Structure formats: structure tokens, C-alpha cells
Amino acid sequence: CDSSPRAHGSMTEYGSEKMAEEERNASAEELKEKANNYFKGKSLSDIVRPSDKDAKMKYQECNKIVKQKAFERAIASDELKRSVVDSLDIENMTIEDDYDGPQLEDGKVTLKFMKDLMAWFKDQKKLHRKCAYQMLVQVKEVLSKLPSLVEITLIETEKITICGDTHGQYYDLLNIFELNGLPSITNPYLFNGDFVDRGSFSVEVILTLFGFKLLYPEHFHLLRGNHETDNMNQMYGFEGEVKAKYTAQMFQLFSEVFQWLPLTQCINNKVLVMHGGLFSEDGVTLDDIRKIDRNRQPPDSGPMCDLLWSDPQPQDGRSISKRGVSCQFGPDVTKRFLEQNKLQYIVRSHEVKAEGYEDTHSGKCITVFSAPNYCDQMGNKGAYIHLRGSDLKPEFHQFTAVPHPNVKPMAYANSLMQLGMM
Image (cartoon, rainbow, N blue to C red; front, side, top):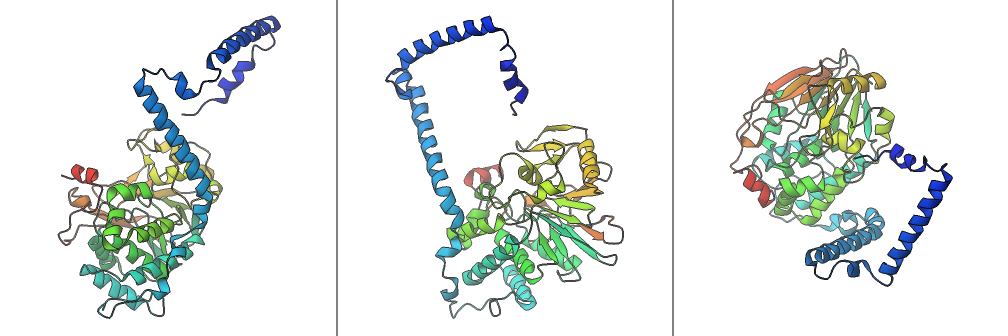
């Protein structure tokens, strides 16, 4: 909740009444003197009544947290400079003789490697940790050079495919490529966040997407979702999955890479794509988005938080989000944002839709979701969108879920979250 500057300013409005002011000052001095005498030589813990055990315990707990936060702040600047990569000797990791899976060619991702990798993952086999680390280091380098708002231009004859959440549903990702063709220079893709968590093949999804980003850096685009964050990964399975398939250290590197994922993409200066949606306040410009320092865990409020977390609503105005984070925004909010930034419409994801997509706010706010039969229980279709440079009109393509090996969604999730799936 915002405190109003007007409220603070009103304290001075009576300053001109000199006598009243003098009386107040005298009274305040007297109170201050009494308080000083009472508190003299006492610490906060003394002031809590000795009999009030609960208050004392809360004070001690509070004190502990304050000290912990101070300690965290003190080491934060060092931590920012240090990367997991610094403690790894990737080049000297040995690939055992009995490993017959895909390997990078001269340390590089190739189309052959990607085809072999997808087939290897389809058979539920694990990429060698050396190759996984090589890919993560390289993709971090690529992503860290991108702006927070990526801008691309499609010429008249070009089209791009926009996919929504995939949430660790690897076999449905393979089906998208089967239906729509593998990514290539002439078949570009944009995946709009939430690649991981919930589905139990998140490692396979994210390494496949990162592989294509390395193979086609200018024609394969990835944006950050609210699930490319530490707290969501700890609850909804990705951290547990990486630790089960690899190591805690590798999860830390994934976390570093996720922080460099761009937040938005603008196509032909007309269509803006983000994972969540628009902002808790009017007036945010594309320039404001460009200036976001994204290399961090998202804050609890503000433009970065909104881009990852907000949702549209049918009625005008804004309301509190059902998620407890960010807000819900109405058609009038969308209209004002588009007009101010000279845009035609926005594309977002973040919400499961029965048909795999939804067209709201008079065609100005489009949702696309690409995880069919979400969590094996929603029965929804998945969808992806084709956008052509000639007219930028969204063309929706739906698909249904395909079978996957018998590993339940949320298999690696926090045990409390697993209870919710029963």
C-alpha cells in the first residue's frame, strides 16, 4: 500500500499558529523528558514485560531476522560477482567410455546434436552433465547480451510462431515441433516463459529450448516467466528435478541463467509479448521496460513483477490479483497502454485456457497456453500462434495432449505441493 505524500505534508499546515505551536512544543518536551527517564539505561528487550514470554520470543526472533538480513546485505555484493561457473572445471570433466549419448561437436550445438538430443530425451535418457554445463554457460553468455525488451522485425513474407507455457511437458513440446516444424532460420519461434515446473520433464524441456537458442540465437526467442524464479522452482518441482537428475550446483547455474532471460519482445513495433501482462500503474513506457535491471529475482511489486505475474480481467479498471501478486487489469488499462506506446495489441500467456488461447479486450489482449491437458488433469487444448509480417494478424493453431511416460506431474515438487495434486 502506498503512503500518500499529501498525508506527510499536512503535518505542517498548522505551523503558522504560533501560540498553538509553542504549547505543543512544551507538551512534547515534557512527554519526551518522561519517556527518556523511563527508558534510561534500558534496551528494547528490557522494555518488554518479563512476564510476556510471547513478546520476548517475538522480539528475539525479530532481532535474529534483522541481523540475518544485515548479514545477507553485507555479502550480497560479493555474491553478485561470484558465479557457479567460477567453481566448476567444465573442460576437465570426463565423459565416461560407457556414455553413448549426444555430445557437443567441438564444444558447439549443431542441428545433428539437437536431433540426437531430442531422441535421447524421448527415451528418458540423461544428457551427460559436462554437455549440460557447457550449454548453460554458453546460453548465459548469449542471454546476458540481450536487452530486457528484445525488438525484432518480420518482413512481409516471414512468420513467427509464438508458444505459451510448456511447464515441463516435454512430449507435448516434441509434438509442437512435429506439427509446426523444427525451429530454423526460416521457421522462427518465440517461447513465452514458464518452461519448467509442474511437469516432470522440465530438464528435458529447458535443455532442448536452450539448445535451439544456441543454434539459432537470432531466430529462436525465449522470454522469462514467473516460474523462471527460485521460489517457484523450490515449490513446484524444477529444483528437485535438477537435484535428482544432476546436482544442486547445476540448479544454481540454471537460476543464474534464468535471471538473464529477457522480459518482453516487440514485433514490428506493433505487438508486445510478455509472460504475465500489464502494469499496476498507468504511464509505463517501452523505454521504462528497456531500463529494467532484470538480472535478479523479481521484486514483489513494480513493472518487472507485473510483466511476469499480472492477468487481464473483463471489467474496466484494476483489481487485486487472485494470485496475491501484482494485479488484474481491464480493457481500459490495455487501451491506454497501447495508445501511449503506439502498439496494436499484446500477447501474453500465464493462464490455462480451455481452448489453448483466448482473445480478450476487443482483440487487444491475447492469451496463448501451450501445455495441453495441463498437469494431466485439466483437459484443455494447447495452442500456438502464427504471426506474419504482412499483416500481424494472429492465426491460432490448437493441438491436444500426447501420451508421456508414467512419471506424474509434480513428482519432484515440494511435498506440501504434492498433497495438493492428490
